Image 1 (cartoon, helix red, strand yellow):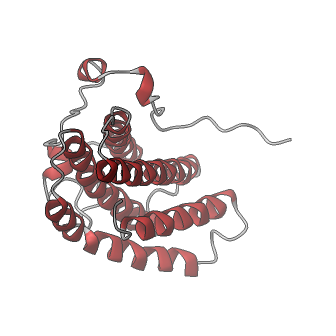
Image 2 (cartoon, one colour):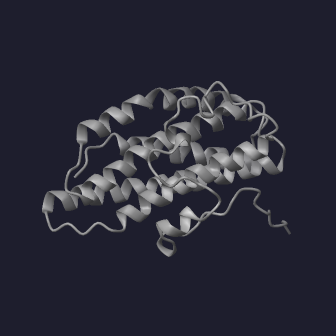
Length: 217
């Protein structure tokens, strides 16, 4: 009989049960799309995967997870307010809702993999750059989708800006794929719970990226 794991990462809040005012008073997390954690090129850079001074590797993982989970919740909450009567706008909103759903799947898969790695003290080594690249790419994509959700609610979608934002972080996905292949080529994760979680994450990432490349509407 397997013993249930206790998650080492912050719990994911249900975005339908909280409002922006609640987030403002919670944990000091910045819930705006101009958050330094999402816009600064130096924040947790892909090559700089070493934690901040006096911050543990687990602390870094928790911070990244909290930042991403908060941003995804904002996208979900914005999508929940869609109410356009315009047919073309409705099609675009439906497409964004689908992408937001797949984004949540990736977030959950990433959480599961990182949590198991943390429990097994394997956040460093070959998994560090893979997780770092994944978080950074998802943060960039989430910010872009969040801005689009706001624009759709205002009936002023900036499609060229969306394409530009996604293109700016495309290199992070490519580098993440390189690290993913290195992880997959390693035999140390085969047949383990961590290995299964990493496979689920890889599948979720590919599915999400494929959907991002499809036209809206």
